[in-house]
Image (tube, rainbow, N blue to C red):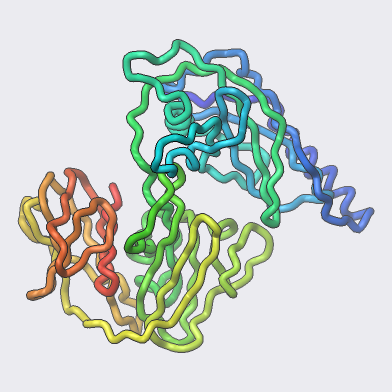
Length: 387
């Protein structure tokens, strides 16, 4: 069984927070502007951690000296030479191939002074940095790591520590687009279900945007969602199913990062809107669009990738007063072609598992697997989520 590697100093953060709270009550605190903070040296630093056998590696750090407890966000960075000048994201997105990376920022975001560095994510990061050959992977690898803290768009970095791993070769692929979800009384079934089991019913994923380029390491870019919204409808846009407190677009399109609840986004006037989310800059807009889209009574998914040849899709927006334009289906596919169809209208694309289909597109080149497929009949965007 895989095991987590434990680190020392796990109580440092909580002690610092208790002290800060005590100071707050007596000193009417002012937000300070620290320039660094401490990443604790883990107890396992001198051991060789076998990444193929580990789920993750535990790290702890102290809260930066902001003057009082704050809702900062933290991430971990890794390097092979203790340099942090060019990220793997920058290097991979340089299509000339001439840029060489010396560090990677792992995508997991932490909201407290501790976190588990996922072993698979670390292995992929090391593969991007070291470019191991499948038949030539070193027995051990020294890794440098530091933490970063973001508060009010200001980023500071911790000290760097080292640890040792037993690496392994990883077959890399580009990151999937980072996804955010809509949930509310005017979305899906209207029941505000914010958990993984509600994806496709209450919690509705946004879609990729036609022509958009997504970061090959982080998956960040622009996603969008076009639908009908009724007057007075309320909703939020969380990034992570089950989390209401961090990375949630709320009233005024403010992204909540802890603290008090800013409230729900409220629709002022009924109509069709496109919600656009830039997941890199974390900005979100909602614009009314002057369209009168066709209202399809049914949508089917058809093609050789389905053993039955055809599957009926289910309307997603079923709340009272909904005008549905998003569809879902759970499917098991074999390798083959697919199209979305309604009567004589059909949509296809050369992309899989996500793309924007058109009525003149080719068959979608599907791969075998089990998927939740989502389709928007206004934009033509679709996404096959692995199940």
